[in-house]
Image (tube, rainbow, N blue to C red; front, side, top):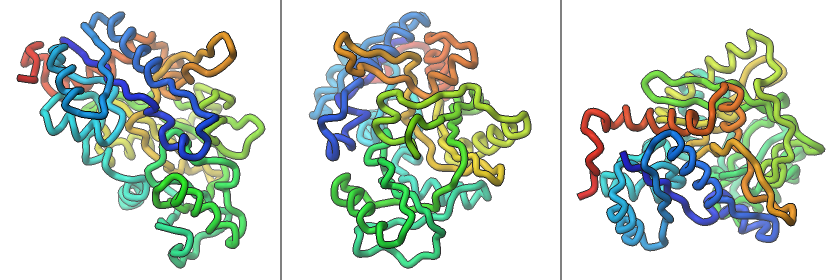
Amino acid sequence: MKVGVLWRKYRNVEQQMRLTPDKVYDDAYEEAYHHYTALQEAGYDACLIEWKRDPRETYKSIRKEKVDIIFNASSLKEVVFLETFGIPYVGSGIDLVAMDKAKRKEIVAYNKLPTAKFIVASDPDHIPAHNLKYPLFVKPVKGRGSAGITEENIVYKAEDLPRVVRKITEKIGQEALIEEYIEGREITVGIIGYENPMVLPIVEIEYNSAKTNTFEHKMYDLEIIHCPARLSAEEERTVKDVALKIYKALNAKDYGRIDMILGKDGLPYFLELNTFAGLSMDSSRDEDGKMKIHHGYMGYAAKAQGFTKQEFIGRILESAIERYGLEERGTKQFIS
């Protein structure tokens, strides 16, 4: 079984680069190398493949390496490419990846699972009429890695809303998702598998001198992490039950991370399902103290579960292998 670990420059920070290019770092290669070494240690024949601007060059690399399956696809463009050429890959399909946060929240609400009320604005001059209760939280409808998130994204007064929407629509270049701000504890739930998914220990994210999980707070590992989360047995059962129902309702595949706020009313409110969740199980800086790679939330959960790096990454890969039936078909490459 030959596994191609795909990596793309700036995959985690390309949106934030439009706002604060001086405060981002690119850990795309280091993240992919983490997965590559994990797969090798798990006994797989693995190779690193860089995503090229010209997809034909990427396809040539995949053919040259005689890859059976791709690990680490990280954008809609990459998933569309893999689907077009019929290349098996790990992770959720176009049906979910192409869906923005608002559509996902609609599906969750349709399934009678808790999520905050929301609207979507295309620009600051056309914010839909609404009866949402302040404070509100504003974020990119297709955001990633907390891009564009600072403490000003919590909006307490109506007169401040257009300014924050403008930051999202003009600087990030996306529509703005405006939702009621839920006060509570931020938690995130990693899940592995497809037919019989495994729910990992819950991660609780405590803010360190911040009101929300901003880009710098998250990408520079400034959070205070509790894993397992500090929950009662009943709270843990409720959170895991709701997370698993959301995972299945959205048809997630192989792995994903469900971000939630555990409200003061005891309900876990859905924020987002991350189909390209960070899986790194370590964090490191260079000799100058600059970040090289930040710790993935699912990585914390995997360690709490007792997984080694190879067991964690290997289990995710095994889910996709089983889903495609590659074991029954042998290791013959799919690309002719």
